[in-house]
Length: 226
Image 1 (tube, one colour):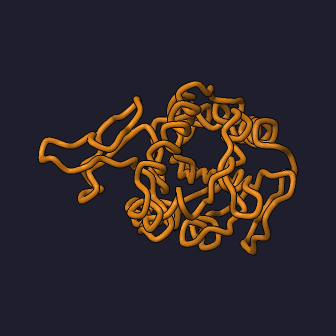
Image 2 (tube, helix red, strand yellow):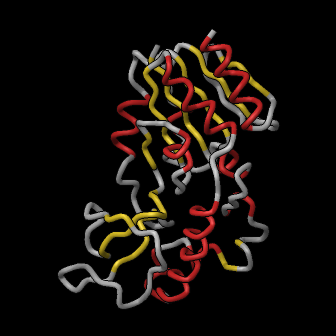
């Protein structure tokens, strides 16, 4: 079977990673979200933005994949699987998933401010004065408010293909567009939504699994692996 898995913050939260989905009154761990997660915030105060993502990068490096990540990776034993994620960590890859599309970027990569296609691996702190070979400042490879999604076209082509058998949605409110179109416009023959409080979704052959990511994903995967 061809399976697409669409994941959001709820999957990585069980590995201890928080995102602005958990923010209250527009604050993310004391930071104004629009100051650290928007292109406007970057141009106004790049040093603060870099410092904020240094903390995010360190958290990702020290986190471990959870049972939800491992369950998704297990699907590859019998099926063709593509993971499309809104998360900027590498926990899907570390759990064993081999085909992962990051809609919102990857915090363990950087790119020059003038070329989003020139990404490089980056696992240490990123500071003002860290430049590429042309002398252009590097920034985190994270898609901020006010920017386009470089991987969206590829993700949509895969997710909305008519030969997708199963779509699994987990850990996302489906409130962030256009990324949410992966689920809302799917042509999959069957759709599983794993979430204790699942988002509204109007598609055919919909199954709600009202569990947290780790237990719900393992339940779905065990069913699909038979």
